Image (cartoon, rainbow, N blue to C red; front, top):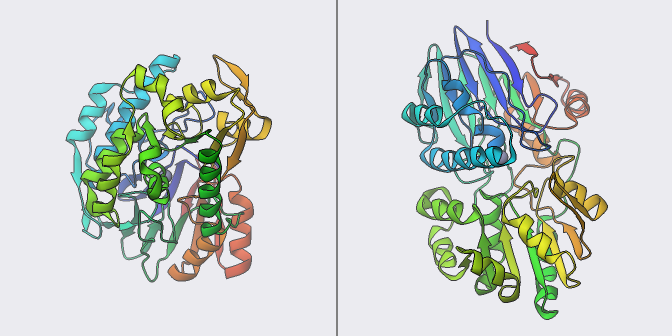
Length: 412
Ligand SMILES: [Zn+2]
């Protein structure tokens, strides 16, 4: 008997963690929900192996917790290990600074790295009776879906994109699976036309430049930042990068085989300004009309510094580029024009825009994944509206669809 236990990401966006058990137990992802604060971690159960789909904190941020007692192999690809370790270490520093408890320490991170088994896309590895492999998911560099085959096939999309981006090819899908564990971030939403959104971004940038203003783009360091840079490739000498975006971009350039145009990306990085010192940071708003900085939802990082400095600038723009979790400072800012965290609260008078340059498939893309993988059942996770989405899938495809809460188990 095989079952899928949802430990995290059940009817929520964040802290993804899903166990497949049948003899041996494999946990797929072990993430933290960083917004809204305080950070929330999944319940950890004893497992025999772990697989990490990609280097976003909501998928890897709690993985060291698996090493508090005992050890196990953790499967992922090389870029995910490199980017994921960077994110985990940074999140520990941020949590410490803000006074939040972190349920693991540096020794657990070390053990995780030591027990990591690097696997390439489509390379098979075994856990008990399960034959497993990672599939290119088109979301960020190195991002993977996971196929677990024990006679019956379970396919966990993790975060997935069906459309090509400047950075990445679209996802690859198996032709037929039995159980589809489907991310549902945009389950109830059709995204705006990508080309139109990119045009909107370019227009906003052009307007900023002609008004001698500044456009701040708060971004996720991994994936989004690099995609935004590729869209803005004609403006490289007008861009300053700050925060973890810098190291993340260098790592992406180093592992060029995961992106479409590694040479072009490396050449671009030579032209943008990396903000390295406080003096450079203080001068950046006067020197560079485009500032790309983490964190993406304004939960911290230099993006907040720039926002504070820009609050009274009439020619200032804040351009968000994707999903903002409910109750995050970014989402609240868009809705109220007020930035608020534990330490400060201020009004932002400039132009605030949210562009849809998402690295997630939208509703049409997700429905297409169901169509193409022809599952017997779908388990919707990683979404605010999983229950509604599951109901729509049942109606459309006449198959079972579930929207489990955390702690629920489904026999497959
Ligand atoms: Zn992600």
